[in-house]
Length: 116
Image (cartoon, rainbow, N blue to C red; front, side):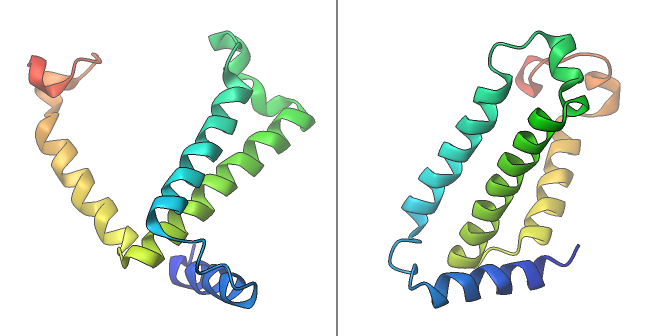
């Protein structure tokens, strides 16, 4: 996956359509939330077993892929507009999370780190 190429493509698409006035940080974050809501809606009333099998249906798997792609697209645009290095942010956050949730305390439970 080449994040830089994806960001360049999205930036080009936005510039060609003159969307930069609409692609403000606030608007992009709101759009990201909306797309996350659309993904949530697909899963909303499913049982855990149904949710685990959602990708076995051609219709629902297509819908899930589309919404995940929309979420990723908005996330990349947010990173571009705010000049965030997504890969660096990812690795920094993983390190913080590993420190907050040491294996010896977090293994096999879903407690928040403040409960250890």
